[in-house]
Image (cartoon, rainbow, N blue to C red; front, top):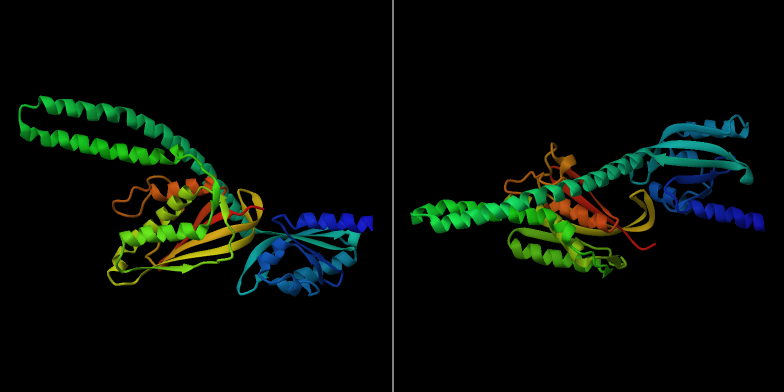
Length: 357
């Protein structure tokens, strides 16, 4: 009985890892699967257990041959790459490892989605870039801010000494541009000045607040659709920072939809969902919140798509390129991440936030 309990405890630990794991009987039927595999396949555990596991692969001959070799004990561990089928979705590539599990006289299958590895690498690059940007912006902003005050002050003193009132037009330009640059510097430094105040936050209240603000700014021709999962629990976070992060993304979407507003064909969808067994910052979370901001605009230009979260990168005339980096900073403070997929006619910003385990 103690051995069985120890084995169960060992299997219980596999429920909380990102690796897709299954235990197969010698006939190839699945005896156990962990939550990560269940989630990746997009089917219930009951639909997997007791069924031939090779059927979940594009080429089930790989699994069949591995089972034959396992029964003959021709290997202790076998590695190969394969395509794993998903319910109602495209198959995806995995790196597979099959090994003999003596304790249960069965075969342990470990699968690592290659797309997941690519995503984790991309997420790591985003985080590293955000840290580098933070230091660069802070140093650059301070270097700009100090002389700006001197330029503005000198222009004001010069204005008092001008013999011709018409020359005041030139000092006004200097003062106005100095103030504009000062406002830009303040926005660059804003993420580092906000205190992080944590409390219970209802994400749908955040969404509704953002909808209210954006619709006040764009009262004609813009439709915001809500697709909420009302069963979502509250999250721990800073309400004001989350409002600002979402507002920046929704405002960006609204700004690119202005031409379509004239045709009464501008649409933004806010969608909330639960994500299970999601990896953020190389940490596996049993539950996470997914908030999608989807618009039917022209899409993001390909040449800036990979750099939209970098400061001062913008595809819009008159844009500052600060809204999305600021949103990413606030979401990362909540141990989350923003990702984006875009094509003409559909841009989807996905905000992912871990829920309390």
